[in-house]
Amino acid sequence: MVDHVGRQKVAQIVQPPLVVGVVDREGVQALSTRKLGKALGVEAMTLYYYVPNKDAVLDGLVELVFSRVAVEPAGEWRAWVRAFAVSVREQLLRHPGLMPVVAIRPVATPGGLRTVERAAGALVEAVAAGLGTPADHQDRFEFALDALLNGLAPRRP
Image (tube, rainbow, N blue to C red; front, side, top):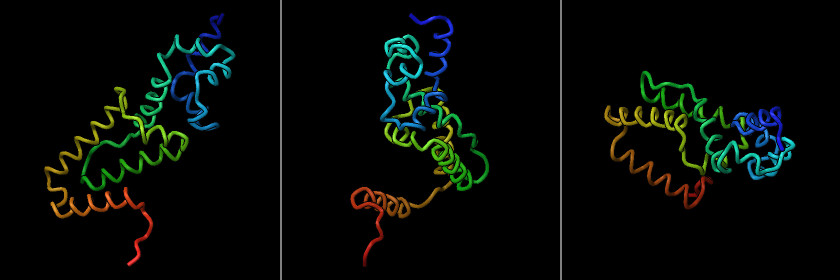
């Protein structure tokens, strides 16, 4: 049985900032309720009192990354998009173990969605203001498709 102090400790560790520590040290593949429970000195099942499942913990990690992006849409769109991308990159460099989680999980929590919605709204405004031409979009599509199929290795003539 977990005492009051134990409950506080469990409640703290399942908060995303503290789970990030485990991911930073051991990688996301090592993140399990059993490992978190062991680190807390409690049974893994005790964690389910605080979070419904491991997916909820992973969603919290994605939200943590995106909620720390402090760039607000303002000014010229190119500068804003670059600042946004740099801010996301800084968060991922701070916690590289989160990259696999952020790359494959959808943003599904309110805090993360607010950030993504801000970015999407700014891009919609940029498109309305004349972001690129149809030819630009075709070139980007072809580059992305080529990168997906062949990787980003230098092309040989």
